[in-house]
Length: 280
Image (cartoon, rainbow, N blue to C red):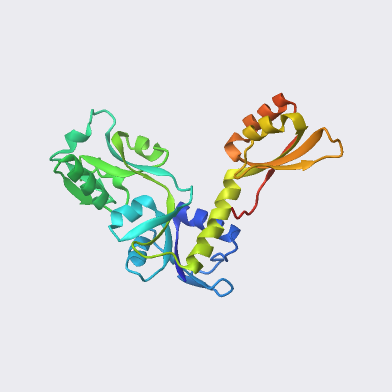
């Protein structure tokens, strides 16, 4: 199986981290464009994120990690098979902050972007015509240099736009994050299923915690409604027959309020622990 991984930038770092946690070798100090993982039967190829959907869509690679926005702009025949939960951003229009802009004002204007197909598709859907100018980087400076009237660019924090005196307007054209893509219309092979299962296990481990607590047996039904787990909590007897031990997975971002609820119910020895790897 051949899998593409971003070769640089924030997507690359996060992708390599989740792959390492899933038991796959990293790139190490090597600058090689490919690494063979013979133990797992996978060849990893390190490519530009924007090129990955093209390679996958053409069938030269089986799966690839890239951004949703990059996959959409490529127009390659790929489909998302797994969302990875990192690299979140939005794709927005922006113009000088001291000017009032609406999306309709883009008609007849020059729009600079590194994602021309996303912009053209959006303008077409709105019934607007404008000149789309493709740039490979530093899009935010194009207005100051007189190249464009407005831009369309990826926005994470908005700090870069503000430094250039720009402000976003209109709705997001694309809410993006890192995704695994496969060729559209092809089934998932067993090798791909194992790979995706491993990554999913890491995502579950990052998003959930294991909660253990003791509670009076008379209140276990009420406690179970607070901590239903994924398919029901594990309830075990204690030496004190009036009490039971309960174990359940809970969403990481809800762990503290859930623990507060359990404490209010009379639970004791409430402990939360990290999950390193999971298969669910």
